[in-house]
Image 1 (spheres, rainbow, N blue to C red):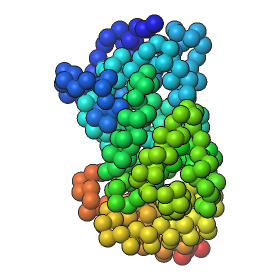
Image 2: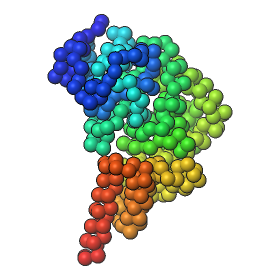
Image 3: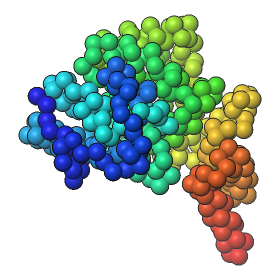
Image 4: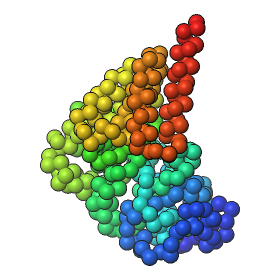
Length: 340
């Protein structure tokens, strides 16, 4: 059955009064016919959307929603709901600037929304699979796998790691795409995981819907040519993800070495040398040096990161302000050390 559309503090059918909602045109595009690559959720609308979903889930189930995508999929399936249609007021027919990669049973949507609420993300537009893909369409998986390359390219990728991340078929397909520097993705990682290069990722992958595994494996073989090539690409992906994960675990010496490897990979790709991808790699190196007390080296890499960010972003305040604050803090630490 269909539940009443109620947003946070709103009435059924109410459109949120936000800049994103105000500029939303009448729905000339048909969201039910698109897995979501042409639709996005403004950052300011994500928590209100989850509030509306939690309310409707409770009315349907009689118990609180646990925040995970897996249980939300059950709600959509049982009630024949395409979220882009039923909750259209929270969406805008614009391409996303941020795509999220996560496991359905390891990260809650509230954790993702908390990240979206950070000031640096206030102008971003999000693509989150369970909130964009019509779970009732039997062709959904086929549609999504064909749009994976476009969804996870030329955007920021918010990765939420847990120890199951690189065992999940969809996450593996996504990681092989967004970690390739040629696809021009800026990667931001939350959480940590034991990332094990040398694994036979192709043959060991798992999925909640077992029928998705051969679909994804066929996509991988078409794209990479062989399971061995794909496994080597995921080994390369681990180099891009490792610095973040290792720093979350407090393993700063290892994070420093992983950052050095990542920078060497990016330096070999001329197209990545003066991009935000390289700026973030320099930022990782700077943070690792900072944690290890190597303040001169940290200062050097923060300056390199700031130079690229200023060139790429111009007057975009938040990313450059963050690096400027880091430079100030490192300079302060150096002054305190010299005085002691």
